[in-house]
Image 1 (cartoon, rainbow, N blue to C red):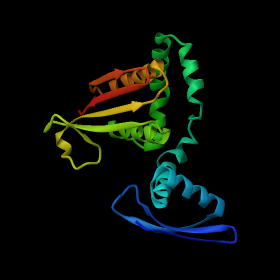
Image 2 (image 1 turned 90 degrees about the horizontal axis):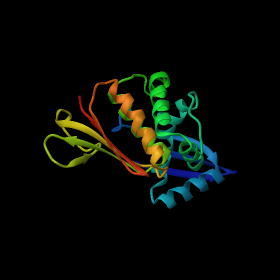
Image 3 (image 1 turned 45 degrees about the horizontal axis):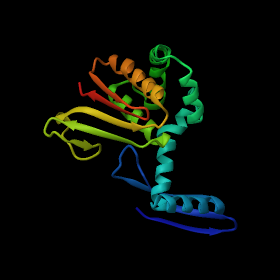
Image 4 (image 1 turned 60 degrees about the vertical axis):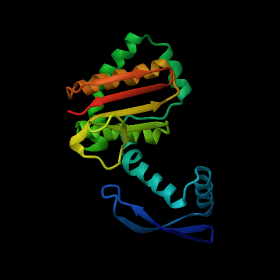
Length: 213
């Protein structure tokens, strides 16, 4: 993918091949005009992440299309990690479990339908990965295959019929009770699909394994 830009009169034109997210093998050239200071900040961010400007722009557009554009119409809001952790630490484990159960029963399906259009196991897995990526938390999404004892990173070529489980490893760094909250939400959620789940938690990390139906 190529990217070119020229700046004049306080603005910049960026020509980039923007990957189509429904059909990743295709791209489309689009020209944007943005302020020069924004272009400068984008270049700085790309250099800091050691990626190309084109890759950064594609990441930003993907996060908007797959998350932020719809999230702003839902009940999602920004809250600092330290504040949220402090609130959770004031709650008992029983209360956290009750909150998770109520959330899954009353709100989660509407959120999935808003962001993904369908309430299926596949769309929930996609939403979970999008959330982890957009939140900036270090994570891995592995596919467990019946053909090997090893995990295979998502998006590698794998026979779908060989997939036996999906494994998420999320490092949130928000404490044991946040791990409990994530565990309880997923426990109640995946029970709706009658699939087996397994959880491993520490104070700052959760590993969730969901069997393929």
